[in-house]
Image (tube, rainbow, N blue to C red; front, side, top):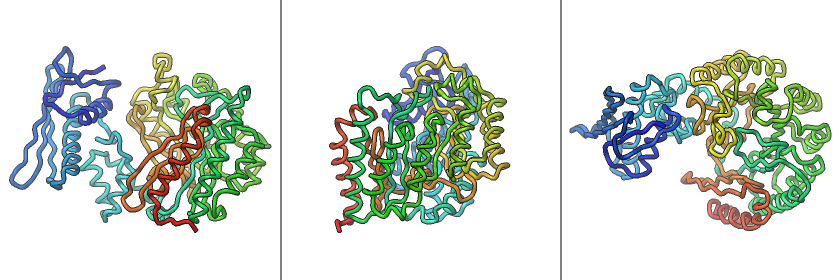
Length: 502
């Protein structure tokens, strides 16, 4: 753990900000009050000149060496919230630059630790800035590298080509349906995912609650003739349940939700190949669903065993071709950079195998050490690639996707992600997932139903976001889903007051 002394007194939210920035350079850091051996000491100063230019300076001392940095901006506004936001940006700049000097590490995402980069780019474009101006603002104000700012601009172009009315969807909704069961739980996973078994009846009880929740949400939407943009079945693994249970669920969905003929896409994650069967694909086809995921994560059997996925590489290949040959027209696959004991050679092998199948989309994730995962709890057990290697693997993924006709169309970042990198979704032209774009850019309300489902209620005029979480545990969901329905309906009434019942 790297200890850091900040020479001035700051409120706790500032301390959290400084800690997040320091964690980009050290596996773990802690802000302390007094000097100790081998601590980093940081002193800040802030001045304002006659031209209203705010000038921030940092002097960082570590191991007897001093590193100085400076950053200035024209004072934006006297509004306290805006002013505080600007001051945090200035202090983040000078701390980041000083840490880069001291460690020799460069952060391509600059000072961004809790902000969605794509949202920031879209915001600047909607404010009237040109593509080049938006890119320059990202580089100047947030220290994002030119390479990453170009990537954001490229992704935005693809998003607006795929969803031209992306910023005009506020009066529609999308639906997320969470099914919390998986054959096993992966070592890196913190999603609601419980090993499926039928001894205590919790699967059946959960599904009873889910049917009721879908019916009640559908009733509210139907009474107001609300348009649904997309529907996404996630989890867990939605294909963990039986074919007949899937069939019944889709029947309830079609009977309950309004204007189903106008829904732009329905996606079902079938991410675990060991859950895919001909009977389940027949059910998907019956209801006109042809967008699924078949997720290898890796094409090395030893890796799959290490991360707790109880299927083989060959099963992934077999289930992909089964799905394709039975009529699944849009298949997504996921690969993860930095899985235990994997380096460039293993990742290149995964890309080579993917090339044989040419799925419509490929999401390249970078391993993230999520707080509650098995991998994080037992970090010493899992040997992962270093920063330089994961950067090379990410570059390899970019080059492979470009060479195979894929374009980047969405991007997001997570805390504790290897190399401070990103997750990027690539797709063949016109095969992009509209749901993935909508949820990442937070442009409309997403109603979450089912176990562990997160609802994001977005007020159409102000853009204010209110989140509501269903319980992650099936037992808790079964006991409380009726109360969750009432609370979500109240949220919907509050943000869509003009959506009067017919």
